[in-house]
Image 1 (cartoon, rainbow, N blue to C red):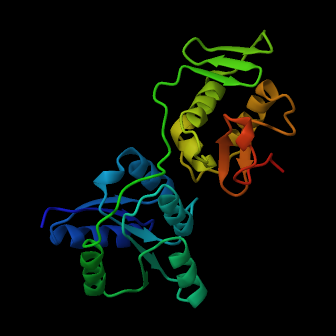
Image 2 (cartoon, one colour):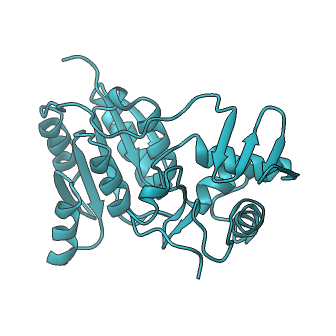
Length: 251
């Protein structure tokens, strides 16, 4: 059998390393990450490279439910094995509702895990349909009366020059290069600020507020830089789809 690539998403280091070691001993290639945002970035960048996802339910910043739901929303049919210490029927049911293939309760028997992995690897993904299309090297952006040139660091609003800081432009560009994606605060902290996503800070919210003040016709009721409750921010490029996913201004 050709070597399979397994992605483990587990924030308990000792457990993740143990699973990785044993699956490598079975001849698999294994990548271990400790949070959902990192895992989704890997899947988005190279979805066909992953043959199986082993997904912990209780993860920092983004739950296993949300990770699995995003994988399925993207049209990825990669087999998902969810791990959780939760054993109530409603927890298992929710796991299956968001698209997991199998649910294994902690603590589990290693042989059972290996057997489930082998069975799931026999499933053949049937393709990708809805992965967000990332625009590469985005140079310009228009939001209503605002025109932004990222390369020249220039901003025009209603024909008048305005100003955004380098960090504000980087946040705006990060959102704009990922159309249709909700970007979480931890992801923005990690990718734009280079800080741990677990850091407690209002830096992201304050930056978003400044962007709205400069670019939005009514910053209190934004049209373009939208908040998706309990998830993060999304840039609405098309005004016809502003409220399609429950996005709304900050409370």
